[in-house]
Structure formats: structure tokens, C-alpha cells
Amino acid sequence: MLLAAGAGPAWAAPGASSERDVQLVYCLDGPHRAGLVSAALRLRLLAPGSTAAPDAVRPAQGPGGAMSLQQWAERRTEDFGRACSALMAAASESPGTAAQGGGGGGWFTDFLKQLPLLAAGALLTLAGQSSERISAERRQLGQQLETEESAYRTAVQDYLAGYEIDPRADHSAVRAARTALVGTLGRVPGPRARRDAARAAADALPLARPLPGQRDGYLLDTESRGVWAEEQRGTVEDKLRLISGLNGRTVYWGWRTVRARLARRGAPGAGR
Image: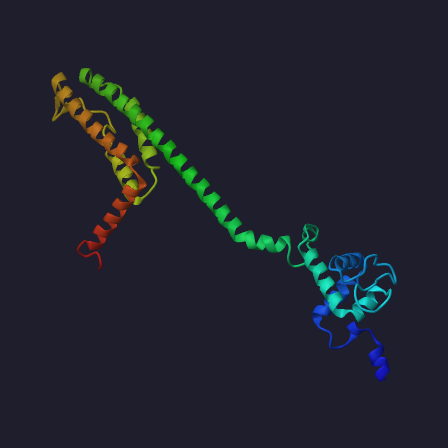
């Protein structure tokens, strides 16, 4: 029984380490035998001329003639372990091995390491695209406001000039231009202070209806209509200047929003 136990190969011993088991399985596998011999030759562990063919391995030093790879692994355990470790290390760093994806390392490990950078880059790209989209929308809205302000101003000037001559002057162009401008003001984005200012400006736009032709039961003469028309011109320009101020920087309107919120909190009875 003792002879039977000792006659088996050294790598079959119950005390063999898991690392050596891996080496034996990997390096003595058919596809890896030639690589094992090549590694041993480069490390000068085998004599020149050794091959993976049966009984074609010769140790570089010490006694022992030709033998098989299995015999060499059994008799020269340190040399075998050194050559096999080198072969496995080289294989794990090989691009071909990484491409096969057979192990837990290689390209997948590199991908996991780079994943945070990739995610950060994607987030920055999305943030940049979102910021550019918002900026483009605001520029477009600003241009639309300028166009509609100009159209409203022109319609008002034409109407008031006609009103001074005839109180029944056509008001339809003013009504259409005012409606368009009010609609655009309703789409002005935040902060809240800017939105509130835009809504207030829309509600305060003059000439929602035609100017009257009489007051207190008396027809207005040309001079009276001229005075009233001039007052309306001044009011319109004041309101349009407020609308132009909506194009101020977001930081300014954000500060206005915070200041208004603090004022509401500090008002008497705000905490009740």
C-alpha cells in the first residue's frame, strides 16, 4: 500500500497546492505544451533541441537524459513551476488572450476600470448638449421677442397716427401684434422672477382695445385725441423697455428670485 501511494505522480499528491494544480492542468494541456517548452528554453531550464514531442525534453543542468514533459514536471518541479508561471503570465497579457475573453481579466477588466471615465464623459456630453439646446432655445425666443416687439411698436404707431385723424381708425393690426407678443411672453423661462416679470408685462401691454372716440359723453376733437395718443406712445415705450430687460443674465434673475423669496419670508405673518 505504501508503494502504491508513493508510485503515483507527484502532482496527484493530496498536499499539492491549488496553484500547482492550475499549472499542471494548463501547461501540460496539448495546445500549451509547445509554449511551455519555448518558455523553458528561453529561461535556459531545458537544453537546446528540446521539444514537446514524446521523450524529447532534456534538462539544462543536472543528471537526467531525455524524458517527457510530464516526467520533467514531476522531477524538476521548481523548473517546471518557473517556466509554467512565465507562460501563464505572458498568455494573460497577450492581446490574443484578452480578445478571447476566456478569463476574468483582459479587456473586460480594463473596461470596468475605464467605466467611470466613460460614464463621466457621457454625462458631460449630455450636459453640454442640454446646455447648448437651452441656450439655442433662449436665443430663438429672444429673437422672436425682438421681432414681435418691433411689429407691435409699428402697429401702435400706425394706429395712433390714424386715430389722431379719425377715432374709428383700424385697430386690428395692433390687436394681432399684441396677441402674438403676449403669447411669446408667456413662454419666457425661469427663474421665477423673470417669469413673473414677463407675465406682468404681458398683462400691462396697452391698447388691448381701440381708444374711444368720446369721453364723458363728448366727442374728442383732434387736439384731445392727439394728447391721448401721445400718452399712449409713452406708455407703450415704457412697457417695451421692460420687456427688453427680460433678456438679462440668468444670474441676475436668480438673485431677484431669491430676494423676493426672502422678502416674502420676512413679511409680517409669513410664519403663521
